[in-house]
Image (cartoon, rainbow, N blue to C red):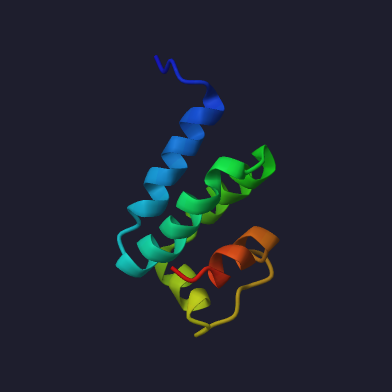
Length: 87
């Protein structure tokens, strides 16, 4: 059983997932952003970040490098902040 409170566990899991993406560029962009801002995230932002983490790296990287536009279904203020993050 996990003895950590649910929110603490989720934050630690998100931090690990953000810094171990599989594409180094996304480790830097997403991992850097999450490392800097995760402690101040609200529960709603945590839920949104969990959704963003399920997006494949190749799509996130194409959006971050402005090779393609973010589809409306994925657009959110948090994703916009992440994609604007300069590591």
